[in-house]
Length: 104
Length: 104
DNA sequence: CCAGTATATCACAAGAACCATATATCACGC
DNA sequence: GCGTGATATATGGTTCTTGTGATATACTGG
Image 1 (tube, each protein chain N blue to C red):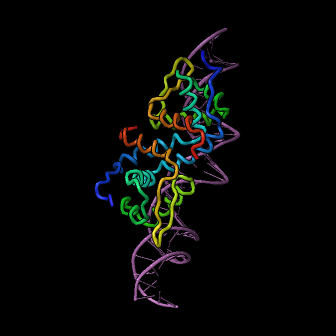
Image 2 (image 1 turned 45 degrees about the vertical axis):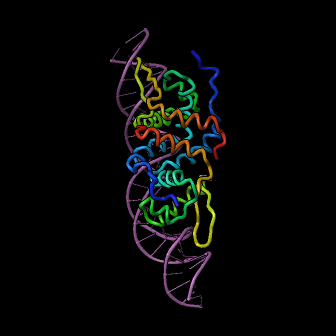
Image 3 (image 1 turned 90 degrees about the vertical axis):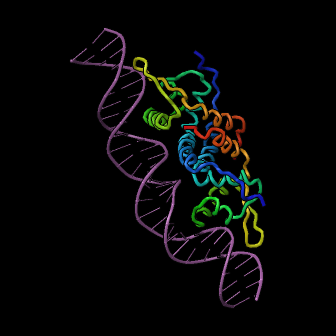
């Protein structure tokens, strides 16, 4: 019975990481991340809205959520705001989904 | 401007996968999954409760959620119910967290 | 300053997630 | 059938999430 020497991930790490993953795990937000991943360059909000086929306000809110989690970062250029992925660990998630396409 | 030939993951796939990831992305559920991953053999509820340092009812609920998502499966042996990971894609998640320990 | 486009925020109602407490079921040995 | 340990479900208050419509702010060109 190998039950003594199991070392689990620190609960504090889990508590820190869970909301990040959880926040990424939303259809629209995954789509945004996928779009940015495929684009391979920063994209402005209008482009993202188009790619997502969703309302502007809603997309903007999702961008905010992703930015607050440190998943995205953005920079303003004139009247445009360009977003890109800041935490590349998220690419693991996207790539995993992409490579499986039938996880569940 | 490379914007035409971007092929995004099908929205239906994202809608299917998102809740699975979302449901895994919870501190206690991640801990359960981590524990089962490290154990490398099915574990009964009491063991899991101990490893998680959480209430029995609560853990049982989380197990149910994970099972409903197809992430876990279980088999009964006498009065014990043994759980194990059914969808090994989840290990990517765990391993990713484990290897980074400072995603965010 | 004004009009127009780009982006962000607010407010809200419906619904879902969280977690605890209490209670139920199930299997076993006697 | 009874008592007990193992596991599951019910219930409910609180908090978080979702997606929408309205509105605000930021920047540009004229």
